[in-house]
Every structure is written in structure tokens, then in C-alpha cells.
Amino acid sequence: MELTGKKFVLLVDTQFNDHEFWYPYFRLKEAGAAVVVVATKSGQTYEGKYGTPAKAEKTPVDINVAEYAGIIIPGGYAPDHMRRDQNMVSLVRAFDQQGKIVAAICHAGWMLVSAGILKGRTVTSFFAIKDDLVNAGAKWRDHEVVIDGNMITSRAPEDLPAFMRAIIAASRA
Image 1: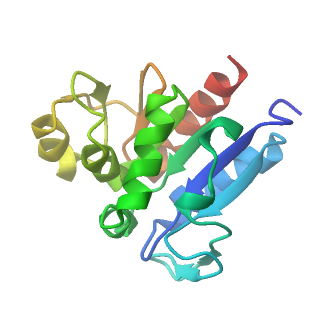
Image 2 (image 1 turned 90 degrees about the horizontal axis):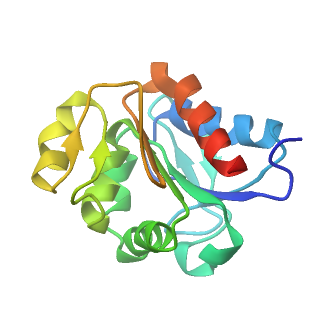
Image 3 (image 1 turned 60 degrees about the vertical axis):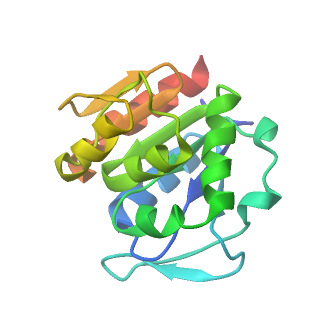
């Protein structure tokens, strides 16, 4: 399996986009990676926008970034909840500072804004948060996936295949 031995953090919170959470979760597992679901409260079950539950296994303070290949942030309304917790924001910043994969789709760009890691970076997102990313110093592009160093971003659920191809390719590098 192409990602055997690799571990990823997948963030979750209330009203996550079900597709943007579960597609990466199962695609990474299919490729042989371990996936750890992280939220502000370990053991809590969070409900997606469409009602699909996801249970958190760890909190941000439980994560040793050095042990992981990357972090994936799904969209929906969850990023607006996630960014209210400083430990969640700090975890995203730590992944970026260590040069690990930081992958964000749809509204997940809000977490990149709050982490303060967008200045001079080229990204994409759901079009409605374009101004937020640009005001944080990013160059915004309307593409299904944008790769800028260790940062991988996509716009919406229909971009998930390209998003995951980019994440898996970057994990092999």
C-alpha cells in the first residue's frame, strides 16, 4: 500500500461537510495510512451537515506533529467552530511550521487565516471566503486544487478526487 506507515490528522467539529471528511478518511485508509480524528473534545461525536456522525479520538494537545505526515481540514461550517479553539489553530500552525502537509478544502481556509499562515501563499477555497483569504495575504486562484509548497487547497466536494490525488502524491515525496 502506497502510504503504509504514514499517519494523518483529520480535524472535525460541528457541521463538518460529510463528503469532505469521509472521502479523505477512507481514501487515506485505502492507501494504507493511519488516520486520527482530532477535535476539541476527545471521545465526542460530531454531526456533519447531512447528519453523518464522526467521533473524535484525540484533542490537539495529544498530537506530536513530528509523528504525522499531514493534517486535513474539511469544510462545511466546522472550520468556523474549530478556529474558536486556540489549540486547534495552533495545531494547524505547527504542521505548517514543520513543513508537513496542510490540506484545506472549501471553508477550511478559515483555519489557515486564523493560523496566520497565508501571507504570500497561493490558495483556493469556496468562492465565498475568497476575500478572507486575500485579506490574510494569500493569492487566490479558482482551480480544483492549488499546491503551494506543503499547502494543498481545494474549492468544494466535487474537487475531492484532485484534492486527494495531490495529498497522496505529496505524501510519497
